[in-house]
Image (cartoon, rainbow, N blue to C red):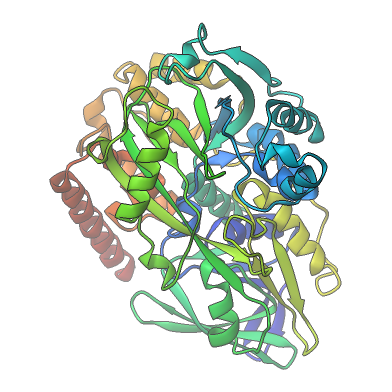
Length: 534
């Protein structure tokens, strides 16, 4: 319901930030009948939300910090989310090799307890404790679809083949992969379908309370400014959440974020099977090695305090050396800098709870409501991608008193665009697409279904041959697909397409990417001219 404010209309809700939390809240709110607008200063998922380890997971190691509520909520969400997006999320099995030098990464509550009871353990993680943790992990979230933990004999199981011979035993458990930046875009698309206004490359210049409402001034990429009025304001600025409070809304606050840099390397493919590895170091840290984009392996992540602007985060040479050395302590064939084909880094905006180290800082989200001075401001601190949907529900629950017309929760298992097919229906969908579009080979068809699900058919339209899709820019990326990404998924530049809407940048040359960018700018220029003439 919109209300008048002078010659303006007031939205129910205005959201700052186009990462997973902002877009998740926008979708949920629009589906509850609220009028919603969202402003993102860059592209959707341009920061933290496209730089994750790409996992829906409970956070096995968080059990050592007794963050049981967070782990349980995340474990429940794995299967809830999997049902809603079987194109961009799927189950994976994780292999955790055991060795006697496994140690706790810091002074966790669990390590302190065990040290007091069994001091001879010297902060080691014994096999029985790991197995107990995995038993809890299996049962805490009411697992129904994903298979349970099992013990592997690495001397005979194929998962042992890439590893050094000193590893004879492993535990194998379940978690899920997710295409993180596509998750953000699909939430934004669904929010817009439900009536929300999504404004990318639009910076919120200021926001102030005005006669019981928020007056929010925005500036778009062409320099045009506008003022929006809203009953409630949500700050989902991610790494910029504190900056928004202090410099955009101009409020004093004692709350802040702890910026923690998580860096990853992508290497040439290191092994042949489709399972992931969960490696524990002698320093107590953990990393993953995950099959990535068919021909590559993703290794990460680090946990480093980040100082400076969030967009300045890069995987430093020291972090690259750390990750290659860490992985080399497990793989038979050492991983070197020469194996690296790409790196990326993101900044996690963790709530500053005063923890001594970056790894010990809470991964739980904190919602801070300021409504003492009238129109409510809800600041979103922290959070993890697995619990974004629950965070959205919790955020809107905090605003129920101010927005009483809001309808009930609805997003659990509600399909995202393209996700309206069964969890086990992916291969069937690929086969049907190949039958109906015979010019698609297996790899091309699988990529389209992974990216677009049932929407792949709409994208391809009535094409009878590959040439009907227009110019081929390389790696099966066609003019028709780029047009879809511009018109339906907010893409404006080649980087939006080849690094966020897809990872085709791993397969395209610099000249090919430049050609994509030139095409996109020309197309949008023509579109803008045509629109101006209407």
